[in-house]
Picture (cartoon, rainbow, N blue to C red):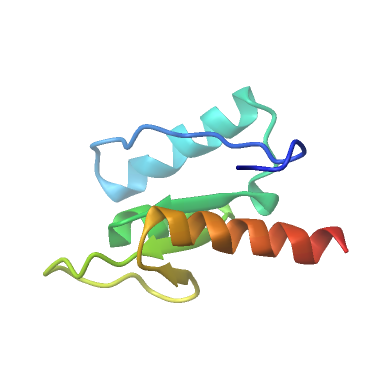
Amino acid sequence: MLPPAASVAILRPVIAPLRFRLFPVVAAAQAAHLDLGASFMVGDRWRDVAAGQRAGCQSIFIDYNYAEPQPHAPYLRAQSLHEAADLILCQQHLVAH
């Protein structure tokens, strides 16, 4: 369970060339008044990680061992969505103290 202070936004993936993926992330963040620098992008494809990096988010790659290119560093790696959530909560705990 997320702490009351945590905000979570789930953005639907956009099927478009990579150069067009940044705008929907930024537009959604602006509409929800989110600080992208304090936000996380979680995804299971290198494109998700790249979109998060370009938007200024900390990215978490859920590695399902797909036979496709791996994302470029820097990013955190998780084996499941649950593990990614734990990473986010740990990071928020470190910042709060």
